[in-house]
Image 1 (cartoon, helix red, strand yellow):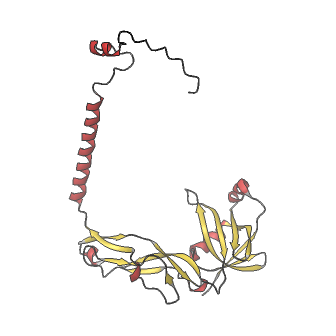
Image 2 (cartoon, one colour):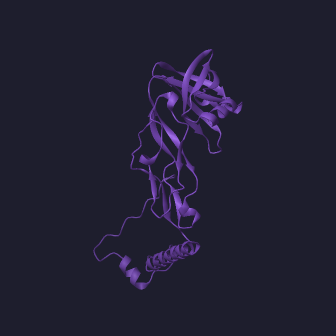
Image 3 (cartoon, one colour):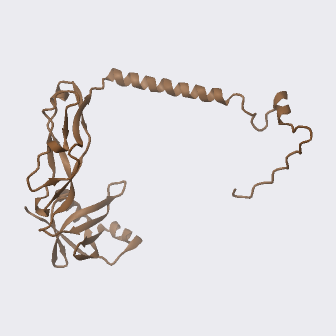
Length: 248
């Protein structure tokens, strides 16, 4: 398997100051692993983006750290809400030791149940955890769904096809994809009407509950209310409330 190559250099800018790096198109990152001291590095964001688009988190990368080649997997990639990269980790691997990784699932084909308008396809999970040697990690696992014909037909993790060198760690009973009942336009409209009716009923109940409450400040209380508020004979009148401190 061909390894992607990526050149990085040691990073001196740390902490909040890494914002300066991002502004000039440089991504802060770290290299770590079982037999390597964690090292702060930096890489051109454009170079990282191109490499990551090819490898994801399961493809091996030959990291060139100032002349030293380190086999790594890309992990812990962070983006902001705009989709811009903020940080990434490079995990050094031993090519002779198995590692665990999450592998994405790729749905192949269209179920017969969908083409014949019997039901809809529901994809429950998008990735599974596997264990393999770094060189045997699959880039993705294909899930063929064309044979799903009836409501409740499903594919579980146990049905996934992987090479003998790969062990799937996710619960084999976990449902990956299944056929659900077809929701018609009429059914969706009816559900919306029922939801609106329930909301209106809830608002009416809340309005009824508000009646009979004490009058708002500035309103005149009824005679019955005034009598109820006056202290009984022999009872002390409540002390005047002290003004609250500013800020309370």
